[in-house]
Amino acid sequence: PGINPTKTTDQQMNLTSTRTTGNENGTKETDVTMHINDSDDCQSDADNSPLKHQQEQQLIQFTKRINTAISNMESTKPSKKTSKPSKPKKMPKKTKASEQVRKMKLKSRATGNKRVSDADRFYLDVVVMELCTEGDTARSVACFVSRRALVQDVISVAAAGGELLVGFNDSNSSRYRRVSNQLMLEDCERQGYVQNFGSVVVLMGDSIPRELPCLD
Image (cartoon, rainbow, N blue to C red; front, side, top):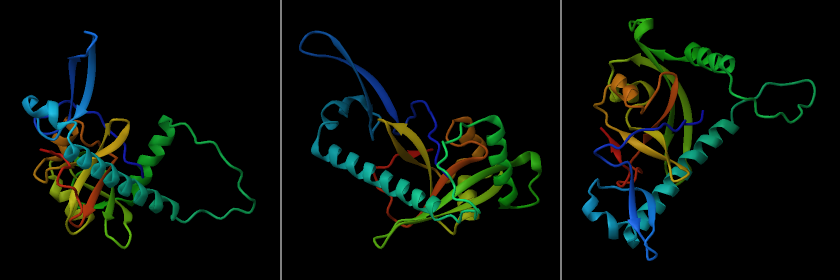
């Protein structure tokens, strides 16, 4: 399952900001940047520093590793046998009907605490990833928890530890953000971090770059 990027507004932690500066010709230019610290005072020189560039490259490589592992997981899923060779098909447009089918399939294979009422259930397609030097792996786990459950409850249902990541649009590439384990799911939904029947990543191990921003 793809990790659908979601939009969000400026947070106190580390998201995007827009600033306007003047150039040599006296005209104004608008620059959109992602910064690790939310301080305008240290923004100017830090963005162009070698360390900043190195950190950006590390985050880009980190994103590629996650996306590659997810793609490999999708390509190894068993396909249905057909009597005739299948012809190349165009990617179907996302319709309300196809989205409803996707939600029904996710709901049918989701596991969780059955004592949670249907009205209170929050469904997620969780991609559990293990990043290691011998090769990254990923597997999909469908689960449901209470809307009032914490992020750490999602992690405990999907895997025995790890950190939860969500996707964001940043500079024309998908970047990931950590989500604090102590956030409640309904608060995450309200702030646009996750959505019911959406997809998230639970990352195992200690390979998360320390520069990766955390939402809390």
